[in-house]
Image (tube, rainbow, N blue to C red; front, side, top):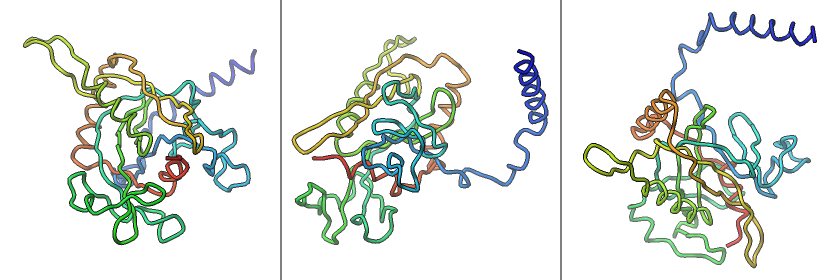
Length: 253
């Protein structure tokens, strides 16, 4: 018992000492010096799940949610509460795995003329004349209810989930001084879980979205609003890479 009390007092003392120098030495760091992490669904072939892979994370299992920045593992059954702040849909251009860089070759807006030049190949990929392929991607810039910003991407079989989430958000109506209105997407909290799905070609994990309710904390609401403004201005960026594409390569069409 005495050891527990001593540890608690020590932790409080350390916290007080650290608080005096809060944010010290971060002066020269701007938004471009930090990477926006992804919240990603782990699949059977994800390197974090493979015990023999250098990227393996102890305890990682298919169906879990991974924060790629902190490497935190989240139970897919319990999920994570998030506040969606900004949404965009675009077409990411990739080369086939093993050819060239693991980063996207280009990112095209939804209205780009290049989208009309694709043809579906045998793997149902939208193949461009240059041999690369486009992947329609829905991206959500979110604030985690427990703190921290992240990016959630949905593609392939995740696109119907994204459309359902968008419909859910747009369907919220609240009474106002001039009648009913649709609040900003960052007004509500949602729980993201994972569910197992399958077809005649295989089994995989997908996102599942449930509305929790309005944001209750004013400070959290203001943080989400500020993040939404920054994302809309393009001040917040995320680097799509191999870790972002691994899961979609495993989804059977």
